[in-house]
Image (cartoon, rainbow, N blue to C red; front, side):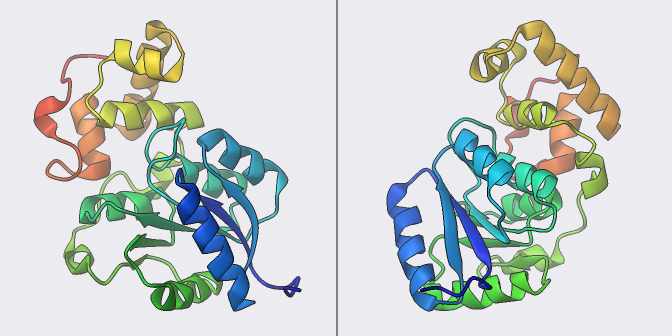
Length: 225
């Protein structure tokens, strides 16, 4: 039986093969204890509300929400839990966005278990801003704006809207994806711009992901909210 004192882990990934493989591997170490698995944003939110966890391992994109939503939810609902993003996105910009959102580490899914475990132990003991060694340029990047405190002023729904804006979607498409009205989207966008101190939608996205990163500036609407 696993030690009840082992760090409790929540696994969040759309792929069952990923979560089951990690659960089996982590439980075999007898150092970590997987207490919950989620394959959608709603499932992740449920476990974050009801299940005490010490570490959350999540992908960037989870069905049912925008990018990095689980990072935001975890840091909000379980502020003492540490978040590790495990992603296929080999991008220094997404890594920085994850750290700015509150993640303690950003690793690629190609990371061998023998390398993942030391990172999990370090994170469990308070290490932060740990990135995959293959993203070596990240350490030389300038700090992004806004700082985490500014992002934390956004509500969960505003964070969702900002994530959809980052994909270059207009208000109508965002409303369809999030099942809200276009007027509600406009209201959220205005609130996002005000809270971040951004000039327009493109500026808000650039503040988070940088103009040359995962977001394609040419695809961003630059009109008023």
